[in-house]
Length: 223
Image (cartoon, rainbow, N blue to C red; front, side):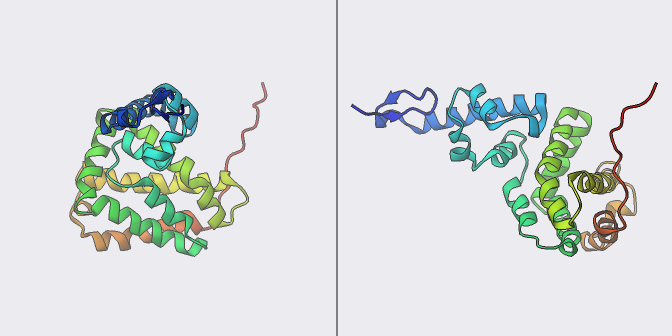
């Protein structure tokens, strides 16, 4: 007699036993495992298989419940937006010329939106002052998820150059966020969102598509 597979044990179980409580327990176990592994190994270092193993479930359930690793990351890190939707925007870009405007628009929507703005600001404040490991995981996620698509759109010779450009861009945007949202430095703190968009766009364009610098090479030092 063939039974349905139970989410947590993989053993046969009657259909009536597969209740909402079981699904919620599975989701909670995956989120707890993901938080632990993301904190310990970063986004790139925490594999889907390892997260599922830590929760005692089949790896396919991450896709079933969260739509993939990115969706699980959003839930585990309590990000008030859908990381998969944000990443999909960048995957649809076809040229380097489109990237700066997309970055600026996405930045404004996330940090200045009436719903996401206060939540992401609170997340930033916690990451800076209470949970610094959360900030490193968020940065690791952004770089791991975006370096490849950004590199492809920029036409760079490799991911190293794209990572260099994104590091510069991230430092500029993070400085803007801290000055505007945390330190509340005027007149930046009170600048309307549309004016902020126009202010940061040239910097974003220069960081992503301006004259290329050279990524440092990891060469052994001589004694």
